Image (cartoon, rainbow, N blue to C red):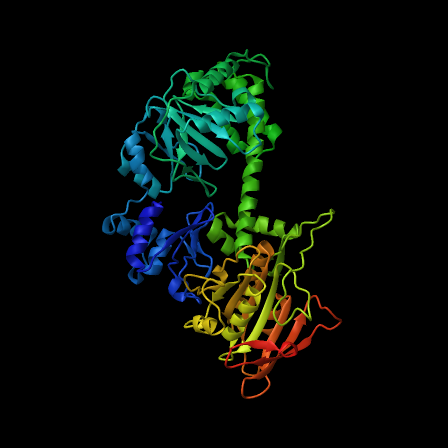
Length: 621
């Protein structure tokens, strides 16, 4: 609809601290709904949804198109239609709607109006029509139509269409590598790629060359192009604006060699009985615009969704033998029907996959309405696959029309690798518990009761064992540097993040590291507590090492969300002061996953020295 970079320019004009970053091959931008975020982080949280024209925020769950984003950011545009917003962006912000059309104009492509959500041209005699004006193309788009590019001499292009919905043969794989190496203009299709080459009159339009999933589009043909969609699946250019190259000689030789299939003698088909009086008039093949196979495939595409394959084959065979002056060989009809069966199956598989991927994104409280907003599939298709996914055990029904994702378990029979025991001593607790790589240690204290002092004491004890910890401060105005100096630590004794981290779900744990988070507060918000600790638990499963998380306690030393918060940790303890001076205190250990004795709880007595700022266990004083 609108080029992303142009959209980002608009966002920069409306969001003062707009930011865009690239992470693991995907870009993130500042959320348009950031003012309603619980955590005001500096890192962007909104990302494009795969296979969709919508954006999704990983923190607040906001989702919407470019037009929705404008309505969110500009109060006076809330009632604007999509068309009004596109006009506003085009006229007021100098943003081009459908910028790909400008490039089509530069290539001098002649476009074709195509049926909505389809591949069939709407004009009679479209192969004799030329449409070169952007204003005309825009009217088609605004009317909900798809766009096609006429191939052949009129647009100066020959297109090789590779279908990748099935595993390629070795022969196809070799050709595909040659095509990829040509570095020509290329478009991703829902099931493969269009390779656009300069017009070559020697290469005739044909389908399924030597039984491979390769078609050629040339004189008399057309291809769908962006921003067209089929069942909400996009056509996207890989390198729009690139040079259009000459067809590689090796590929051309192969295509010309396989054109001999066109000269195979016509074989008999379903109805080859002598024609009677009153027979149907014959169509000369040039009445089908030089694309006989295309016409039959389009007709077969309509029939395959209404009839079983054997009846589709019968209908096409009758039309072939009774209406064509020069019938195609029956093997061509067989190949078409097999292709249509595969396409139908693939469309169904694609729809199911899109719905399941959406469910994985939403996780819980999933409804058909939610899925429709993400996929724009029809409600009857969504309900069909939601019911099927429930039947297969992938979803749990939570009420009428509501579902929740069930986590899939991968079962194996081979011996599993157990997490190794952590080789360093964990300060204060090594005598009462075994610790393993990937463990989360939860330590609690009330606000203003020395959590940062304790964290720096742990860092000092780890440094003395030759470990350089990673210290992550979530506390505004933390005075850890002053405390570190009092303990004899300097900036080279531990790592600390260059910038403060406001959102704990954006913490990226270093592999096999000893890390401390000082401190985490989620209050009684059970959903937030679950989200944050699940994220940290997943990080530790992937990264290993040890993570110490300091959390705030109530004034009576109780946990907030006690049952949930302790369920993610392998070890949990609270520091409790035993007198009013703050000198004598103890660790009340509430959970030990791997105890060194028979108890799942313990007490570790400590004394704090106000002069040295050391917190030490009683027995080593």
